[in-house]
Image (cartoon, rainbow, N blue to C red; front, side, top):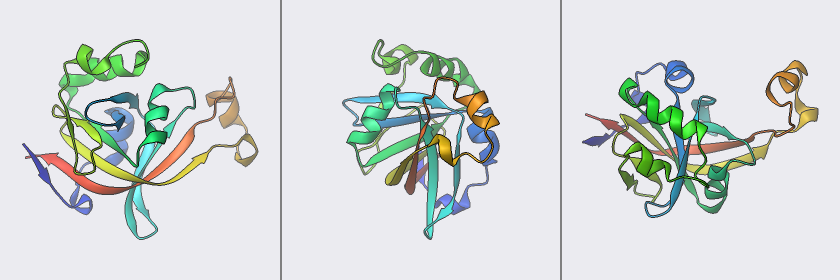
Length: 168
């Protein structure tokens, strides 16, 4: 059962949560949503608010849902779900029903943003800011060569964490 907690009380290593364990970025509604695996992002304070950032390439199906709704979720899972997270990162929701294939149970936060009962930690975020990355803004050009050979620069989303749900 999830308990609502203050995000400032999280004691997890956010670098490990995001990069090593991965997360699912989800948007839409409980009835129609999409999710994708991500290992880039951040948590912190911005504009005197607890925020999360995530980065989505423009061609990703999840981006359509991110653009259509006010809120999105970041969900973190235990190691037993690693295979499902890998599946969600390698397959498009345009082609398959990832939620069904992974056996996830969709539920929604107070805002209506979708997340999964199988997660251990969920951050429900209200979008505050969206910014496409621009090639001329990179101070280290090697980042472009290494991460954007196709020129498909991520869009950065900053969201205020409006609910922090942790399994108790």
